[in-house]
Each structure stands twice: as C-alpha cells, then as structure tokens.
Image 1 (cartoon, one colour):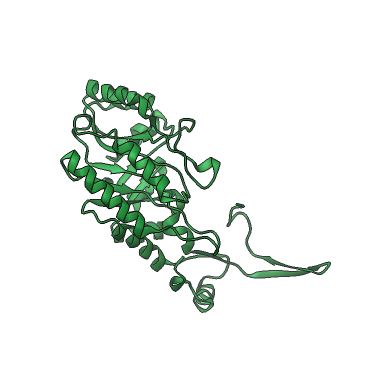
Image 2: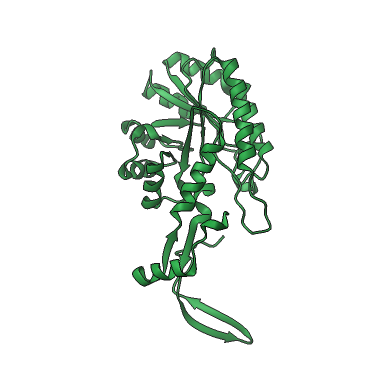
Length: 306
C-alpha cells in the first residue's frame, strides 16, 4: 500500500466524533488512485476496468468508482440490481453467474445486462431462450495460479469456465442459434503472486481467438487476481511492468486479429482491500495472568474471521 494514503489517528478520531463506534471508514483517495494506476498502466486505447463488487459492495464505494468511469463485474442478480440502483448504466455491468439458475438468467437478461456464460449446459439454455442475442463466454485457461488452493480458478479440475477443448461445441451452439459472441473471458485465480502466471492465462486464450471463430468479438476480459500485500514484508505487484507486458502482447495480437479489441480487467481486492478501517472502542480491559486483553464494541459480525 502507498503509505501516502494512510489515514491519521486525527482523521479517524474525527469520524468517531461524528458517527461513534463501531464504524467502517474507507479511504476514497486510495481507491481512486489504485483504479487510475491500473488503468493508466495499460498503454492501450481501448480498455476498461470492471470492479469485482463482491470484494465490497458498499454503495458509496460503488458510486465513487462509477464517477471515475469504472464498470461492474456482478456475480448475482442482487449485485446487478445494486449496480443499477447506484446509477451504473446497463452497458457498464456484466453478469458472471457461475452455476446460475434459469430464473437468474432470465432475470438478468430482462435488465438488459450482458451475461457471461461459463458452461456448455448454460450456453445451450441461454441460446434456446435468447436466440440471436449477444453473449460473453468464459473459457478455462487451464493455467493454475492463485494465493490459495481454493482461489485458483483456472485448471481442468476447477468448476469455472468452459474447457478450451469444448470450444468447437461453443461455436456450433452459437452458429445454430445465431448467438453473437461479443466477449471472451478468463480468470486464472486470485492473489496471483507473479505476473508470468497471468500472462500464461492470457496467452492460452489468445491462441484460440481468431476473427473466423469470433466475427462479432468486441472485447477480451482477463479477470482479476492482482496480488495485494498482507504484511509489510511482501513486495507489491509491479503494475507498471504488468501494464507494459499487457500492452505489448495485445498490440501484437490486434495486428494479427485485424482490429482493436477492448481489453478488460476485473480487480476487486486490489482496489479496495487496503483502503478500509474498522474503528472500534475499547470497552473492557482485563489482566489474565499477565496477559492484557482489550475488549471492544465489535466482533466477527463486523470483521469476518479469516
């Protein structure tokens, strides 16, 4: 985290004076800085940041990012409705509902929001319900990366995305139902420690994307997963180097594809995780055999156990 954006004790005291405790405090300047840091690092004309709102769906944070030009990555109809209520236009929201139900599919489509489909069975149901419509498909990059076993979303054993081996079936469904595949999406994992792993996921997808296969394509979405530091001994993710690598790779790809495609990323924690404070008040002091314990007016209902 850029220490220049740290809130002071005086800043937090002023919030407590007005709002009491416990209370959440978010540093909007840091969130805005992170958003533009990532956006500006990518030296491409056509680019977009979709905030993964599952990281924090506080409406004030959503409104802040909306004003900066961000779009929304929503994973449930409730998140879609919240994004719309905050004022995001429908064309700045994408719905990626893993294992979505028929009801969710119809509900989101009725709002005019683009659906990102990650399984053949769901693609068949979408095509049957909405022939001729636009859709995004989520492919499994078959690259395993992430900070923990449970947040590695690429690889053949994960539940996310359509296996690349099934791409001919995807294209057959699209042809049979006149679907317009306007976006191709992949997400390698969360908390990815090295940019080389993100690049491998991108490379795997780019090898499969051709104008012949995707004549209606408008964008490529490479998910999120940018690592943040959980203690001061960890090095920060090199956004500048990452952005340059992305720019070089996509410029070369665009020349072979024949047109500029919009490149999208979906950061969540990277934008907001280091901006938050939970401010509490000590209510009890206990000395348990020489161990001093401070009890506060908060608990796991406000800060979930890691």
